[in-house]
Structures are given as structure tokens and as C-alpha cells.
Length: 521
Image (tube, rainbow, N blue to C red; front, side):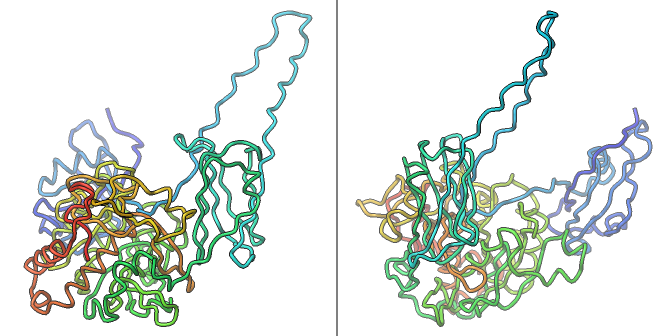
């Protein structure tokens, strides 16, 4: 039977030979606004399925296409020299809780009475919604904090509760929860300059006014300062680190070493070629990349904040779209490819959580062959297996550790304290959210890490997203201080840099599957 009206899906077409291959130079694979016919796999398929080539990484490189499932099957038979993989998406690996909304249940239709005396049915009484409760969030000086997200769980296991964001007056209303109802957990995430808040076994009536503590950028107890504050301001000098993320604020006074980058979101650039220059923070959840960049190499000339390797040069490759959501494996492969071409010695990818895919693996292998080390966050799925792409053996996979005392006792990081802890007994721990497994290579500072935020701000975030750039910064320091290592080329350099990174690690007593070689220091 003919196949009609099949939904178009997006795929990446690769060469069976790897990232590049002569089979991809066929005229069929040239990007075009129009559809091209794919030879039908059976005579019953009439007309032939259609395919549109949306974008390409090199003339002989991977292509982003859309076609029906029938088109994918037909192409596999008609062009056996190519490999077809689905477009998949990866996500930021920061730790933020959200409420799980249950779908509304449909009420059964009212039955008509079968007796004459019943007359009209009485209207059902509408359920009375709880009034909710108001929360006002201020800073230490009493000023209102706008844009703070409040997440209150009545049932943490099922992620049920309510959330709201404070307005200009610092006030938010959490609806449908009575002020006296027990709240298992409450999280407050301010946008910048203050520590968040974590509270347990409380009620809305007890949270009417929340006063947050200001972050002191020169506090010696901050974890990055404890671990790497003694490194010189020139640490990482001459090393280029690519930040494949949600974009970086190159105008931040603590990030004068951002030398440029590229917007690698194919859909945005295809619609507007000038958008290629928009490597700035994405319009939704864009602060993530700036925070990551500051951890690697913030310089802190005036604020006092500094990252692990202030001497590095940073480049921003934005893969998360302005509309929010995940990053396409096609866009990530493009970012890796451009980072290598622009001379990045190290690439940081604080992302993951999608399925394993051959395109990302091919791009990473090509980077290693060129001498670029790819460092990736292990994922924040609460002791689940290491997520992709960190689980690929070619990557440096990073778990997240924290240290009691490096943040206030009522900060969000308190909820992340969990076993295993350091041996002999220390204040160090593997973050509760961190994934683990035999793929873990190293652990990094990832709980309540203070770093740069867009618009000249600073703030604290947690996640393997934060641990990853701490390790990338230390790798940059190692590369810069060893001239012989830096003079190596290609796969020899990437292999030697990974070996030097692993040799620098000190086991913390967490166990092999939680820390790999240990903490770089």
C-alpha cells in the first residue's frame, strides 16, 4: 500500500567511514530549501519518499535532514555507504528542581436521571481551592529580591507542590497550598549575588519572609578558593578552552579573556545568517554558560572573584537555543568541529542526558585526533549510570563533590550532602545528585560553586555542570605549565594531557566508581 502523509522526522546522515567521507558529497546531500526524492525501497511505495537537507558540516561531512520514517528506510537501502542516526538532544547538567504537574483528569459525563421526578441534575459543587500563601524574599540589607524562584514540595518523592517567582517587590504567591500545610522541602533560587535557601518540614505560614545571605566573593571558605586559590593569576596562560554551552557574556568584567565564538544553533542561523554572531547567553536559561566560563577562567580584576585558570583564553560556542530546551547533537558536533578548527586545546561540555549517538562520538574522536581534550559532565540523575556523552570512553567524565563549610548551613547545597564521604572522615562528599559508574574518570568541585552570571553578576550553582569546568580549568593549568606537553601534536597531546590530569588527582576515599582517579589538585 502507498505510504501517505507520513510525519517528517529529523536525522543526521554520516559516512560509514567516520566524521567525513566521500559518500556525503553526492548532489542529493546539498542543503536546499526544497525536497528531493529518495528512491523507493519497494514498488508499493508511490510516490517516492521525500527528503530535505537542512544543514551540513563540511561538503563531505554530516548532514542534518528531515524525512519520513519511510524515507529513512529507503535511503538505507539505496545508499549503503552512509549511516543514518536520529537527531537527539542533550541538556544542561545543573541542579534545579521543578514541580511535576499531573495531567488533569477528565470528569465522566453526568448521567441523566431515569425517573421523571428527578428533574434537572444539580450542578456539582466546585472544589474549593486552597488560598495559597505569600512569600517575600529580601536580601541581607532588606532590599526586595526580584526573580527568585521558590519551589515548595508537599510530596518530594513525586515532585508535587507549587512554585512561583518573585516580582519587583520581592513577593510571590504559591497557589493551591494552604498556609498551614506541611511542606517537605522548600528551595529558593535567587538569580544573583545571594545564596539560595533550603528548608525542610515547614509550612507556608513560617515562610512569609525569607531573608537571603549575600555572597562574599572574597570569602576564603568558597570551594574553588580552597582548592585552587593558590594557583597563579597566569594559570592556563596560552591555552584556549572552548565552552560548548548556552552562550557566554563576553562583556562581564571578570571575563575579559572571552575572545569570541559562534552561535552553533542550526535552526537560528539557517533562519538568519547574521545570528551566527550571537554567541552571547541564550534568551532562556542562558546564565548557565557564563557561570561555567567563570569557573574555568574568571579573572576577577575588580570583584575579587577568580576561576581555576585565570590565564586561559575562552571561546563561546552556543548550542542551546534562545527558545530554551535541549541542544541538538548536530549543533554539538558543529561546535566541537569549530572549536578544534579555531585551536581550542580543551573543550568543556557541561551537558548530557540524551541517548548515545554515533555523531557525537565521531566528533569527539576527531577532536582527540587533533589534540583537543573533551571534558564532560557525568549527569545529575541521583546515582544513576553516567549519562551520555560522558559515558563515552573517549571523554573525561566528571562527577561532582562538595565540602561542608564551603556554603551556609541553610543553603541549597545542604540538600546535596550524601554518602559516600571522604576517608578518613572529612567534610567532603559526593553530591547526592551526581551520577556514578565505572566510566567516571575524575571528580570535581560541583556543590554551591560561586561564579560569574550575565550582566556583571555572580551567583552559586550546583551540578556536574559546575564540576566539569573546574576540571577543565585545572587541565588548562597543567597544559600551560608544561612546555613539552604543549608542544606535542594531535592524538599524542590529547593522550598526554589526559594522563597528566589523571596523575594530578588525589583519591578522596569516595570509591573508584564515584571519583575515578580522584580530585585534581
